[in-house]
Structure formats: structure tokens, C-alpha cells
Image (cartoon, rainbow, N blue to C red; front, side):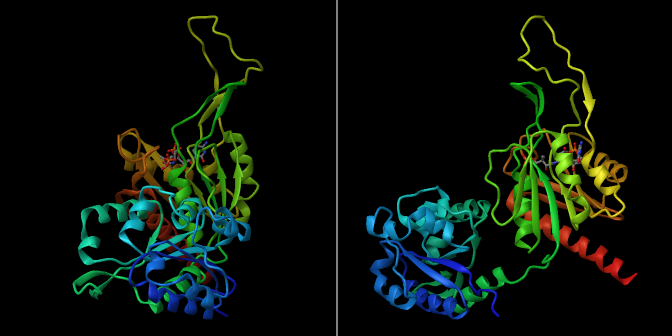
Length: 406
Ligand code: PMT
């Protein structure tokens, strides 16, 4: 049994000399049990013909964005939804630049834009092009989008130069795809996670809210999922698409989030509270829109339940991870929250500054647990989430192993 059995892989081929190696890769993926469909850019067809891939895959090769014949067999959106994984090999400097800028000017770039499944690129280009600051900037951008970058390798190049830029060999790419689908270290572990901010209604048109965009929490959902966990996300209103491959529930208020979490908390192994939950809500919600009659308006606010504290107080509490959003004395206040809420680990972040915390694409965290601390420096939230997921995994497995030994 291979980790690629019945996996649907979309192999994108762009215009580099390494395109001929993609035919070998296609065969290797199929031999490992994957179902493969091929999409070629017009430049790729200057190196290898679609017929080669068609003959090898036994399926039509997709080349055109607007081709009525092809659209009838599977349109570009269906093709993006069909795949479990997209691998672009080789990925040229031009293709990388186009996805970095969100272009949708051919079938393959459109698929990458429309896809919600993981995407890996295997760069292949001249070493000077790879090292160029523009390419490196594009690489940083697409890493931030969550793209996997496999390679490039270093060595002799088809152009006669030597350096970084060779596409990884087909066997190495196959190994990476197989690793990607191999059961993760959190297989059979269920993770319940809250993200986004809550909205507490004042009247039918107004609410008390906060600046949470959901980015930190959604990135962590993806990172935990990619470690093999079964993830359930309870999310406040955000403008992000729910990550694929998870269970998703949307709520508006803290009380709704409380109900959804408490219904599941005893059945999960790990609970992570990333949501910015309103501590207070208006005591009464006006039935009609409040009119502008007086110079001032007072709202009486009442306390919301503390979801994180109540989960960690359960008799059969999961491993609990809280966040602490602080504008001052970040570590001291976070440590006080860790102790007060009785959580296993807390991730503290500075909020209210121009970079990091709410809304930003980047963040930095200080992790605190009983007897230890670790700082994760300012970086893109996707990268940060992967590092945090790794630390949660390590601490959770340590606690579980100790529990099993007793
Ligand atoms: O969503 P982004 O724009 O990406 O921003 C990310 C973030 C800044 C929201 C995130 O990194 C973060 O810090 N989340 C926690 C925000 C928060 O409400 O912190 P807090 O210090 O007020 O709460 C402490 C912990 O208790 C949090 O885990 C919170 O989810 C939890 N809590 C708080 C109140 C409440 N009634 N119930 C809770 O469970």
C-alpha cells in the first residue's frame, strides 16, 4: 500500500528543458498508485509534445484556458477541484513570477489561483535567474501564500553554467510527494481550534467586534491538518475561505462559539484557542435600530463565558493551547493568563503595533509552558503557524507518552 494510492495529482509542466524529465515523473507517480492529469503551458509544448504525456498518462492533456472541447471534458474550475495536490515541475522563473502576482493568463496559472489544495513548485532555471533578486522576492511571496518549494538542486546546467537552478530529479520529487501524503505525526489526533473574532450584537445592524482577521488561526488549522490531525475549526466571521480537508463551523457571538466548542471539547485531543473572543457583550440587544436621540449613549456590558478556561477545567480536558494578545508587558501578562486559565501552553503576541498581531500578514510569538519558554521571531503567519504546530505536536506527544507510561 502506497501513500499515493488513489491520490489525484495534477502535474503542471512549464517551459524549461527539464520538461522532458516530467514524463519520467508522470510514470513514477502512476506506478506509485496516483491518478495523474497533465496541464502544459504553451512554452512547455516547445520542449515536449502533449502527445507524449497523453500517451503516458492515458488521458487528454490540458493546454488551453478557453477551449470548448477541453472545457466539455473538465473545465478549469472542475480540474482545480478534482485534484488532491498540484505539482508544477518544472516551474520556470516566469511561471513563478506570474503566480506570485496572482495572474490568471493561461490554464495552469488560473488553476493555481482557483485551487484550494496544496501546491508544490519544483523550480528549474538558469542559476543567475534563480539568484536574481526579483526571483528571490517572488519565491518569498509564494512561500507566504503557502506554496511548497521543492528544490532547486545545484550542479551543471543545460546552458553550460554551474550553480543552483536544476530541477530536482524525478525520484526526489516522487519521494517528496509520497512524504507529503504519508501519515503525519498527528494521525488519529483530533484538534479543535477557534479563530477569528466574535461579534456581539447591539441592535439589528450594529455589533461590538475586534480586529481579528482570522489569518493566524486559519494558518494554524492548515499546519495542524498537514501534520495529519483531524481538525475542526469554529470560526468567527472573517473574509477567508475555510481551509480544505477539515470540519468547519461558523459562529457570530462568543456564546455561540462557547456552545460549539463545549459540545466537542471532551472528544478532542488538543484544543487551541486562537480566536479573539469578546470578554463582554451588550446586556440587552435592542430589537430595533437604536435612534440617534441623545448626545451620549451608554451600553451595559455583561461578561461572556471564558471558553479556554472552561475547556481546561474539564475533568477530561484535552491538551490546551491558549493565545494572549497584549499591548504591554506581553510575557508577564501571558504567563499570568496561562496560570489563571490552567492551560498547557500559551502563545503570547504583541498587538496594537504596526507589524504583527491583528490583521497583519506577519507575527511573532513567545511560547510559555510549565518550566519553559521559546521565542518565534517575526515572520509570515503561514511559516509561524508551521513552527507553532510543530511545538504543539512535540509538547502534546510528550504529555501523552508520560500519561501512557503511568
Ligand atoms: O486573526 P489575526 O488578524 O491573524 O490576529 C491574530 C490574533 C492577534 C487574534 C491572535 O494571534 C491572538 O492573539 N489571539 C487571541 C486573542 C485574544 O483574545 O487574546 P486574549 O489575551 O484576550 O485571550 C486569551 C485567551 O483566552 C485566548 O486564547 C482567547 O481565545 C481565550 N478566550 C478569551 C476570552 C473568552 N471569553 N474566551 C476565550 O476562550
